[in-house]
Image 1 (cartoon, rainbow, N blue to C red):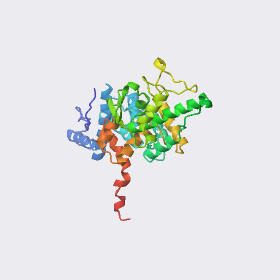
Image 2 (image 1 turned 45 degrees about the vertical axis):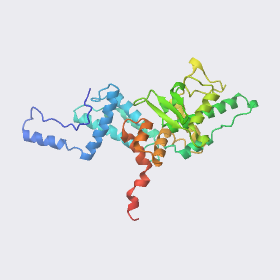
Image 3 (image 1 turned 90 degrees about the vertical axis):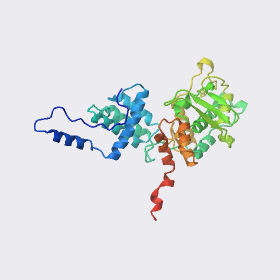
Image 4 (image 1 turned 45 degrees about the horizontal axis):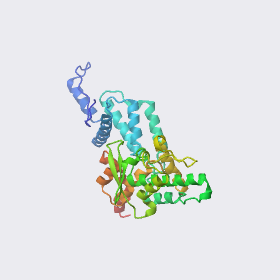
Length: 343
């Protein structure tokens, strides 16, 4: 396994010196090479490298040298959590570490360029930091209110029934995803046996996650129309779901699969539910994505004073620096020193 510590590697003095080059010359060259970046830049690179190396270690992969495919997988995963500018710093750190070790950098391949282009295309073009918009409580309210939740009359037919069931499911996806700060892959694969209900709300166990398995607590909401616990119960009751995947496809026939035929929805379905609900609510669907619920939870929580440690635990972040980015974004207007300039 490659070096996992965020060390600051430097070129070694060559054992054999070129003609006309003294040992003193070589030492001066080495000293200058060690200063190829500012101390602050090196600290950033070491921090970014540490995250990448730890990620590789969990996957049993060697970060030095890293393959283009391995780095692409890392960047794709990071893109769900951090900004485009941070992703570019990740790439620069990996390139720097490889070059300092005299290794071919995986960042030079055309594949990494395509991955970065894809991240840029799917990020928020107007948000300033390459991120999709956070879905805050005011947005969630509009999205839920736009759903066709009114129960159809018996004579309206199967199409109306299917539309109603889909609305119940989508409301549960929006509210549970938002309240639980779930990744869309985690939300899509919640199973009945992972949910336990109590007097204060419910707990949802997440056995398969990008970090460590965790259990998320979700309390009853004061506003019943926005309560994730009640919304999930109404959906599972209407769909007669007692075991297996909780979130399933709703066909036009309104007959939801049961037993061994029941399959969970995918992360793509979660993304479509959010985008469609945003559009119906008069929001920009291009700025809302699968990550908007999770990002919105952390941002809204930070605005209401939730501590970094609690937000980190709820979201299942392995590194507090990831959570801190959301908190910094949420409180930027409170902490800016522009207000201290006397303008």
